[in-house]
Image 1 (cartoon, helix red, strand yellow):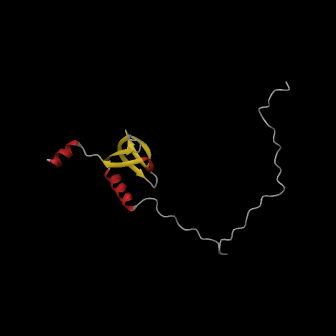
Image 2: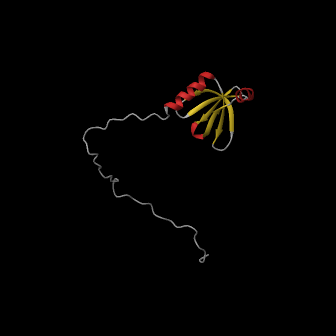
Image 3: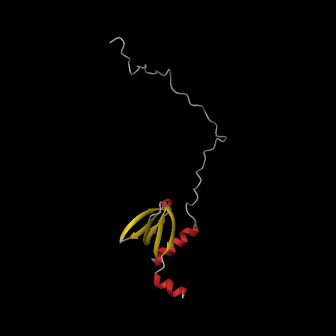
Length: 115
């Protein structure tokens, strides 16, 4: 058994001699910094378009970054998400996952417009 190798090594615990030292950083002013309001997270153009779709209850086609498609009507929106009614059930859709959105035009209306 004297030729047997050990597969682990015992390491003694590190003992810190004192409290950790953190360097003092001068901010340049003795006055406390006032918080600034953050800018809006979405544009007014986006908000106006979503509000129009919400009031008109138009049918939308939502295409996601992975290519999946969802059809439904917009029921609510905020800075980061949309709520789309799909098959009568609300579906939460994060804006970051959306590639594009368009209004679905019924085939009859499209034929009527195009002639």
